[in-house]
Image (tube, rainbow, N blue to C red; front, side):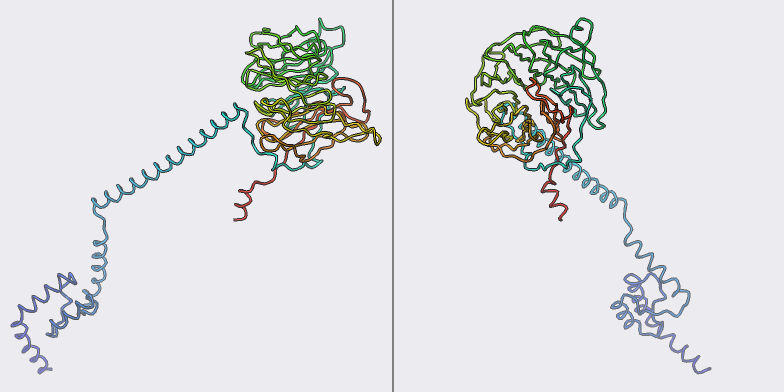
Length: 495
């Protein structure tokens, strides 16, 4: 025991002699590796220990003190925290960078939205230009598929055959008129009557507010404000479409009023009559404007769009005419072999007509002859050798598209509504599908959205009583226009 004590006391002076070196080593180790002095080896081999510690990052430096070894991990942890702690300047720089990135993203999003809106506006303007020029043709027909019979709805309310109908611009309501002199406003979604304007008996014209003779035609303004109706008493009635309140009565025609149309975007009204004249009215001012003459027989149909012109079907005179109102001039077209009973504009420069020779024709206002003709569009009836084509009693066109419809009657079997696809530049007609109905198809209209087609059907032809189909029902057929799923959606679902 005593010898070991003296050995330790002898070695103490050696450490004292080498104090400077050991102290230097200690300071070096403190600066590089550890903030504590307990990491120095007390065996006298300080330099060797320092080299080992420098190569192993202070992990092999031992300590004889338990208190120092307990506090060492905490001090190392605090050193690491100091190394990763963010200074105020660094924090400002980081936040500034984040802010700049956010600004950049916002500006990029705004640029994308602006370019998208610009493209939309450019596309809309281009469509409007094409529409004004009569060259807009939306390709819709290729996506249409026949509706299920269970999806076709029928509205009944008139006692006598339906003669005409219109759909409001928002596609929510249908107005129909009939030979019973009444007008009914229907709700498209529910199929219920919203309002009924009853017809009066003959001889009650002075005291009855409404029609007292067969109504042959009707029109609604493009803003849905006014409804106009014309009857066989040579009268035109103007109604408030929303409330069905009677506003004005226009007199002046000397024959039955057979066609009415509002100029799109205005309240100018064009009327056609069996007196072979066209009249122009200003509904806002309750005023007559002018009369145009030219047809050689009773006018059977009339239509117009946004240009200051209208088109008419001349019945037995076999002509279709384009009337330039401002210039007081007209263009005359020939093509049908029989009486042209119905006409509808597809766009500003193309139209479709139907006649009692069973043909459907497509026209351009720049060509005197039809661009395309389908003869016997609805087949024939009668014995072999003396077959007669079914009369085409109504036509309709989905505006600025390649889709049209025609309606006819059949004495031997159910009538039908044919839906057609127009070829490129309106050259050619291809049948898409047929929808069977019971009775004379006296009126056809497409909804503005192209979601449905409405057919007005009756037991008799709208212009006469040549035949009567007792098994037919007087009513309105609402035919949904179903579409195939589009290719982009199919590819997305496939992905």
